[in-house]
Image (cartoon, one colour):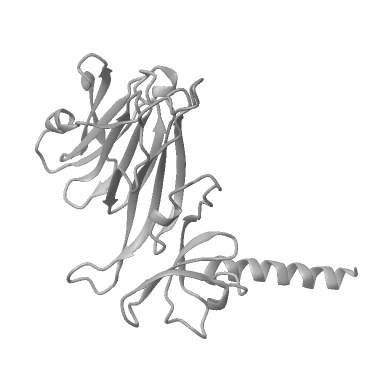
Length: 283
């Protein structure tokens, strides 16, 4: 290839990259999308779609003839063949996460699914996005020597948990309490209180129990502030849960971080440490 052709080729490549970054790949067309749901009316119509690469997109289907206006929301999770609840997940929602929690000795399995969908809200011209958490219970009791089911667990026909959140910022399925039991922790945005969390614990029988965080909420001082909640460094023996409250001051912020440990006997989070600092804003 001559130097001139090489320069032209590089220019075309760079040009395509710029177009892709600004307006989306030109190969992305309405015909190439698999639409899950549509809400609203033009010009405020919004649609949820999946492209050929499995990306879940929020698109404006009214933009025909122009580069597609879209927002990537994540990648669609393909359910494995042994997932028996595909028909129970709404087809109008995109599946973002699917995690199994199994106990072969007792013959049960939970499936934790996170989806994203569209909904209409009163006094809102445009539809809004919402996340959904579904937990399904499957029973595969091991056979005994007599050939009968070894346990009396029963597969639920629908989700044992079905909750809607305005926005899920993180979903963790892990032993976050260090007690050899799995927890399902959802960090989400509440329209009233802001960032918050819900936690369920899975017991030995595969039943789910909500862990109350009311005591953690009561520790937060009522004030005009910004509050966050999150998981601590539980993987390395650190505190399991923390909150951070930022109160504005004349010079910056007064920050209070509270750390919590898990009380196995009382099945609750106990306050372990409080750290307060002042952040000064330099002008």
